[in-house]
Structure formats: structure tokens, C-alpha cells
Image 1 (cartoon, protein in one colour):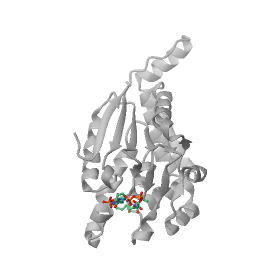
Image 2 (tube, rainbow, N blue to C red):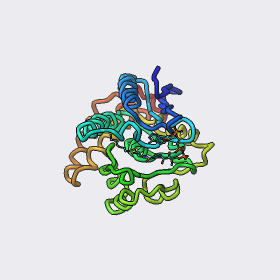
Image 3 (cartoon, helix red, strand yellow):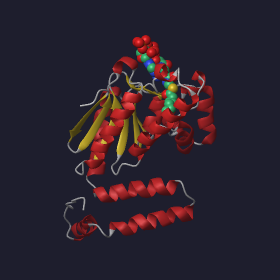
Image 4 (tube, rainbow, N blue to C red):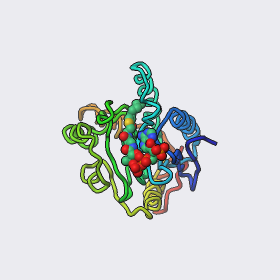
Amino acid sequence: MFETINYEVKDQIGILTITREKALNAINGQVVADLDKVLEEIKADKDLRGLVITGAGRSFVAGADISAMQPMTEEEGFNWGANSSVVFRKIELLDIPVIAAVNGFALGGGCELAMCCDYIVASEKAKFGQPEAGLGITPGFGGTQRLPRKIGVSKAKELIFSARIIGAQEAYELGLADKVVAPEELMDKVMELMESFKKNAPLAVAYCKHAIDEGYQLDIDGGVRVENKWFGKCFSTEDQKEGMKAFLEKRPAEFKKK
Ligand code: CO8
């Protein structure tokens, strides 16, 4: 049980909901501590095949908690950003696909949380933005780093300098959201995507994720070397033998995550 999040598993998919509804799920120290704890549980669950992150009520996450940050000193601000970024990075490094189901406001730290996920599905009601400059701060949960990597440097600068809030369709056109769906279909569409990932070899999916994420930061030669590493590693798995044997025997594969 957690104070600020709800976590349940359905058909091997974890569903993590931020539940600080009274503050539109704004992230305070307790949310970060709860996320850290549940991520350890998620990492230890070897049966899990995917994770969905969403928010309760009308917001995904409306940013870091402004009332908690307002009195912070320089040192406290630095520590808050640095410690929380470690927790956000843990999401990115999970061995399973992670989808952000953005049901409403994804502002500041909320937009940054969504960007730690592998894929962003937005409800038509979702709103994205990095409003930090209007509060006298920079984004602090990775927004200055992940947003330019996702949508390009100048488009990220325009959004961050202006603190402009955008709708789901514009987020999609910019390449920030990957899919836009009707609000009532959000979780069904996310679960459909998860099913399409789940039918494949779980270790291969994990290695694909690591190959893409590690290689994306490098030049093409470095990236190809990263791919070589993960490709080779697949041949040490039982699932590679089974996947190819099943193809040759014209039957569905039975993957064991081994
Ligand atoms: N922090 C604290 N409380 C919040 C936050 C927040 N980020 N967002 C909303 N709330 C609270 C409101 O204060 C209000 O509380 P109360 O009912 O007690 O007055 C309640 O949630 C409902 O909000 P509103 O009444 O404002 O609802 P509206 O529908 O009128 O407006 C908005 C919704 C547009 C989302 C509006 O609440 C808003 O602008 N919120 C702030 C959005 C924002 O600026 N987010 C960025 C915060 S900074 C940040 O995220 C930096 C991340 C990295 C820094 C940390 C480094 C680690």
C-alpha cells in the first residue's frame, strides 16, 4: 500500500496510478518515495510484461508540487532535482515496455514523467507543457534533456521559453505524444498496445529497448556496436531457439523469458 499511488497487476501488466487528486497529482517528496518503492517491486516481478503509468481524476500529473518547492534553498533545489531524477531514470531503465496513458494535465514534472516512458498515448483531453520558466525555474526532472531529444532543439526551446501549454493534437504533431485517442478509449488502446508487445519474446523486447535507448545517444558506428552486443546476447536465450524452431515447425512459439 502506498500513500500517493495505486499499483495493481492485470494480465501481467502493471498499472501505476498517481492518486494525489487534490493537487492534480502534483509530485512531492512522498510521490517520489512511493514511486521509488514501487519501482523496486516492479523490477523484482519477473512475470511482469509491461507497465502503464497514469493519473487519477482529471490530471496525469500537473508538475512538481509548487507549494513544496517555493521555500527551497539552492542546495535543497539541487538535491530535489538530482534525487528525483534518479527515480525517473529507473523508469527509463526498466526491462519492460512502459506506456504513459496521459489522461489530462501533463505539465512540468508530469510531461517529464511521460517522457521517461517508451510510448505516450494521450487522451484528446490531455494538455502538455513545460511551464517552469513562468515559475522562475528550469525544468528539473529531465525536460531540458528529453524534450529536445524527442522533438528537436528549437521546438523544445520554443515550448520551454514560452511555457506554452499545448493540446494532445499539437503534442502528436510535434512527436511528443505518439497516439491520440478518445478519453473513454484510453486504457483499452493502451492495453491493446501492450498485448501486441506481449506476444513477442520478452527478453528480445527488453534487448530491443536497451539497444534503441543506448544506441540513440551515440553516433551510427557506436550504435551499430550496441546493436551487435544485444543481437549476440539473444542467441544465449532459450526463447531464440524456441522462436526460430516454432517458425520452422509452422506453429506458434511458447516463450518462457529464458
Ligand atoms: N503543485 C501544487 N499544487 C498544484 C499543482 C502543482 N504543480 N497543480 C495544481 N495544484 C493544485 C492547485 O493549487 C489546487 O489546489 P487547491 O484546490 O488547494 O487550491 C488544485 O491543485 C486544483 O488546481 P486548480 O484549481 O488550479 O485547477 P484548474 O483546473 O483551475 O487549473 C492547472 C489546472 C492549469 C493544471 C493549474 O492547476 C496549474 O497551472 N497548475 C500548475 C502547473 C505547473 O505550473 N506545473 C509545473 C510545476 S513546476 C515543475 O513541475 C518542475 C518540475 C521539475 C522541478 C523539480 C525538480 C526535481
